[in-house]
Image (tube, rainbow, N blue to C red; front, side, top):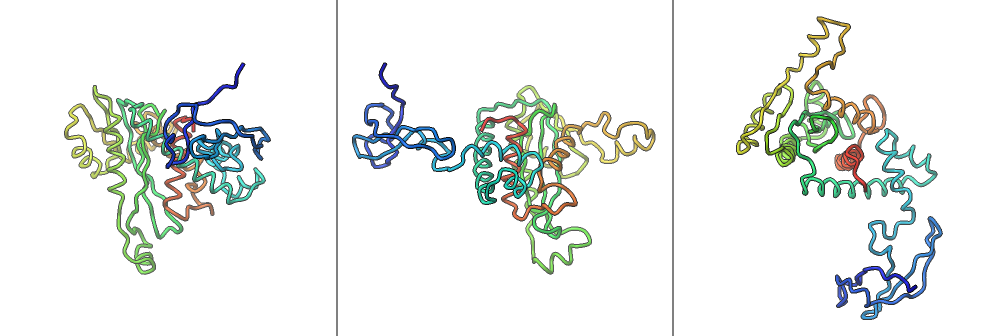
Length: 303
């Protein structure tokens, strides 16, 4: 039997065969051995321009020396381990872990965008709330807008916004870091847009806490979507019921149970989101990348 010819195109942008997958413009020319699994990979050459390529030239892991670590780092970094601990566990350099983390985060972001584009979710109930964190120091707080499905199976969206200085440290933070623009409203707007796109045509129930801004933003964002119902849950509802009956679970019959569950998992599974530890996030964009990674991990994307 003859050798099976894969459908490739010439990687040279200036070649006439670029973008065409005829399968007859190249010929086999030797092979090379990969360093990470020591497997032979055939090498090809374009008959038109002489450009050499292989099957690995068209993969997202092209030129990576250790692509077998991508999946392992992806799972460990979404399971509460820090970058340094992962590097120590896998016996590799910390720079390798950081590069793999950023690469997998970009792949996770593309996977989630693909799911949203083809409207893989159709939600009849959406739960929304915000979490708080900080970057580098508690003087610079951040807001995490989070929306999950009513059954807790999917995270619809998670976005980071900058919070203005607040609390007893506001004066010190303002003197040390100057003015700080609050972008939490823009973060919530992005999550509301995703929620609107994923809302079921038959109707959607939106559950939030009793923050007044939520009702205003939902009414403005969903004004053209008539089949929605907003339920605002008082913040002290469960605390009052627990005070009346201490033997009762605090989260029993909680309308925001699945959102609180996902928020608790974020605090547990993301090392930079844990409370009262030294592993805090130093940069806002890295926190966003870590959230994209966890979102893909929680939703079960294959990346």
